[in-house]
Length: 299
Image 1 (cartoon, rainbow, N blue to C red):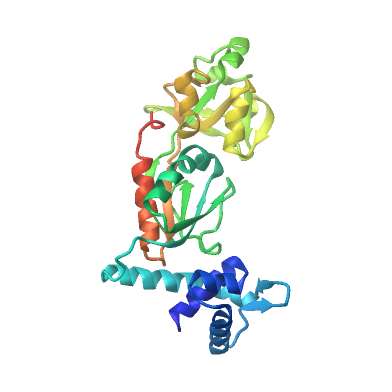
Image 2 (image 1 turned 180 degrees about the horizontal axis):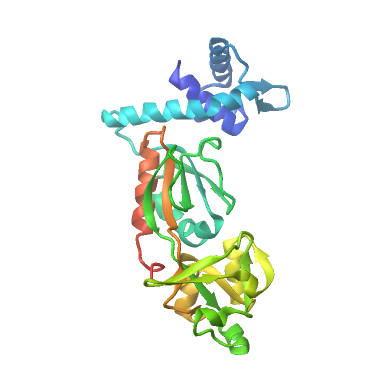
């Protein structure tokens, strides 16, 4: 199978414009159309639906797309291993991350990354809703969880410590809990999946039951959780990376500072096990590990 034809197909599928895809690869529109037609004839399937007004991806094209991306990635990795790619890494890298983390810690780093790697285009999918890496054809993703999926590989970025905090204004009006038992009756900003959780301080463990607290606000977004806490909405559970700046500035106060949520959540940079680390993925992963190695949120 012609690697360059697959590269053209991927570009056309991403742009939904065959002429633009061809130009990005230095091909005239007629040559790009002919090369795609030849690939479709070879595969015995129409990959792109064409009309006079638009181009759309067929079901067969959608099925082929993740495999085409992987074939191209494998080819680039093989050339890199043999030292055949002397130029800097290039291409489009699809990266998924929670929007709350990305807004605070990744987006501010992008100018520095693009200055170092001007030939890489970052296609970012930022949402606190988790994407499927394989079905979504992502090259890399950031996740906060124990790495359990055997189809994935990953590198640890940092521990994801969860803490209790509230605004000084809220505490002035409702008092500051001194023990876990004092949390009962306080206003609580809850996550949608807030079940009983354990708090730990050394070997000591106690159960935190949101039902024993006054819960009038349920949120499913980390940024909204932080903003609601800053506004005095109550006590909330937040990742330390989300509230570290506010804690240092005194805009938030850590409740029960000797206690934290008892879980094994870790920030992972993960990628499909079937994928090799292409130059563009490796350089972005290494960049993030270097840029985010600061312990500013790992108190």
